[in-house]
Length: 146
Image 1 (cartoon, one colour):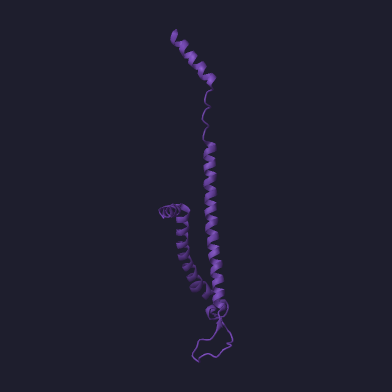
Image 2 (cartoon, one colour):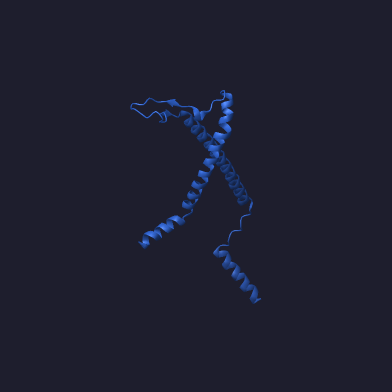
C-alpha cells in the first residue's frame, strides 16, 4: 500500500499533471466568462439584427404520447440554447487560438534571439593538441636551463 501511495505522490508531483490541473481550473473560469460574454453581450447585439429574437426562448414544442397533468411543463426542444452554446464554443475556440498564436509567436522570437546570440558569441579558441602541449613543455624546460 505504501508503494501505491509513493507512486501516486510521484505522479501528482510531476509538473505536467499540476499544469493540467491548473489549466482545467482556469479553463472552467474562462468558460464562465465566455458564456457570460455570449449570453449577456453578443446575443443581445445579434438579436438587434434579427428583430429582437431571444435565442434562449427559441423552442419547439414536442408532442406527448402519454397523459400528463394540466400544470406540467410542456415538452420542448430548446434549440436556441444550443445555438448559444455553439456561438459560445466558437468564441472560446477563437480566443484559445489567438492566445496560442501569440504564445507561439513569442516563443519563435525568443528562439531566434537565442540562436542569434549563440551565433554572435565568439567561438572559444580550440584546445591545443597533445603534441603542442608537449612541445610547449619542452620549450619551457629548455628556457629554464639557460
